[in-house]
Length: 242
Image (cartoon, rainbow, N blue to C red; front, side):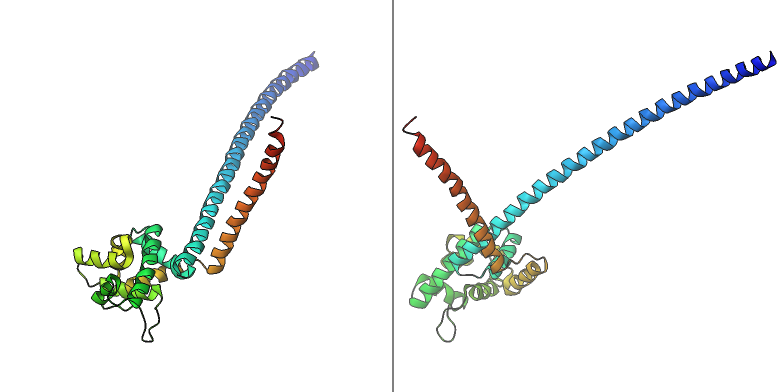
């Protein structure tokens, strides 16, 4: 009888322990499931973040390639090397001058230099004389537009802002002349310092990189026309039937 009582007691104890064990296991399973769900959510969020970051990087990269392409084409149009043009673009941006205003101004500067050299009585020649700047060197050869722009900036730095200064700027740089005054007011040394900053930040673009960007975008355009050509041919074949 005593043995039966002990066995009964053990059964009660073991039953209680088993119930507690079952309860603990179920609780653990619930915690593990919750942990797994949270890890899954975190992984999904991380994956989404990676995809979003990749897309953002792609957008920035394409925009940068387009900027390189623009530098390459503008360099050819206005005759300023890509390296110098990208440094000027950095300086212009700091002066709230757009790249379009800068390129138009430099293009007009080139025209004014040729005009001043060919016709000493022209408005452009008079504007250069008023500043004490020459469009040609001692040998009568045209200076680079970069050199002349730096010399003009050296003169503008000491001139008082006003109608006369604006008139001279517009006579040399065209309609963009007034917009370029904040850039020119920095002086020759200021332009050099900003060009050095651009180089320090890695913002100076090489002619090689700009040309490669131009070729890349040209190839994308060719690819687009190749795809378009397929549909042109398909449409040509289908039109009689349609």
